[in-house]
Length: 280
Image (tube, rainbow, N blue to C red):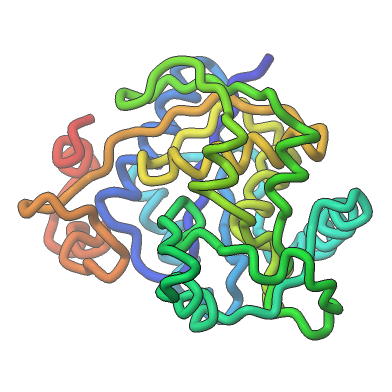
């Protein structure tokens, strides 16, 4: 099997040191294994994606010495495939239409009779308000996965992780998925697919064998492995790396322009300097 990794930034702001670390690590691991490194532009949210940020992604990666195999895959070119897969899951009876707004979900979470659902990898764990309501698609704010039905069909499942914090084999637990993850969003009214559904389809379409990404996405892996099983797609090997943080211990975000790669370039830093800053 060919060793294939990918880097999948969103063109919604500047790449920072955390992005550099993730891209360099995935690139180096692929090259060390005589494999392939792919670049994907995750422009699923067209309301926030900007051509200028996309061009800067290419410039920053080239400057870092990162090269990729084949053409760049852009999510915006595959909306029809996402919608077709969503229809497939609907036809399997695994989804339902939800009319709840974020305000509705917060209100349900704060109501004494509902208890307080925990936060999970998809944000606030959905309390299931619309699970049996039979709303029409045109009235919905989003389409959700019925986690109970999905677990009944797909489990048991395991995946392998080699990252420093969670290395080993992990088994998906139905009770944990239903309680701590809940009925995740698969598509919103103004988007062809959610992050979870799109990345599963993208990784499968490009035959990614090793997913290299930040430790903040480790909990989402259970959702992705479950979707892979439901759609009969292969499950890659996962490696969730440590996050690059600032002096206060806070993880870097795109709004943190002070650590943008372009700023370091403008100040005269070299690609070797960036590698040293991120510990490579």
